Length: 267
Image (cartoon, rainbow, N blue to C red; front, side):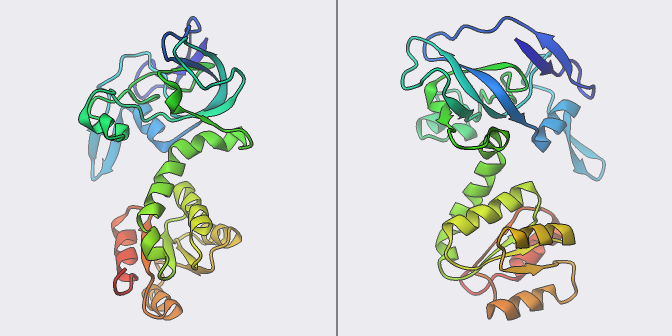
């Protein structure tokens, strides 16, 4: 199989080749059609996360080079081991990459993404920047029939991030409008999830006018510039005292301050 792999941190990815693995036991072999590029992939390729202020978080441990990135994986089921049940060869699928050790208490409770000995595809185990990827069990394979493959894999990262955040404020969202702060890729996905699961108004805020325009086209009923001098007053006026919930997808000090400042009583 062909892969684009890290040969050295901070260097461009390079093509590597190997035998196509034969799935054993419960393993599933997926032929990759699409794999998204997450911003974390860029940090992993660099070998560090930039924390600002000249500080860096070294992330070079936990994997041997060459290593294949890619955790937003879409493709088709090509083969399965004798103990892998419930799948059909040729089935369009996406792959849940946040795989744990399978033996600890966190994994037993279904929280594999929190496992301290992770086997996450594209992070600690070779991932989807390849023609094929080996998945340890069918439970990590989700049928993606009818979903455009060029976006399907992203649901396993930015999609889950946005959906999880919106579910946490779902009860508050029944009481009044929800504000989405930060309209990048994850924020815009969060906006669309919010529109799908809430019957109340969904508002949106970003310092970038073009992003606010996109949010409006996607159905946001109110658009705000957090950098504007009267932004907080404008939101409080428009909502009659503040939003029921605000979700900050920007994660900066200023965006968090704005999000906290516009939440109404009980929000």
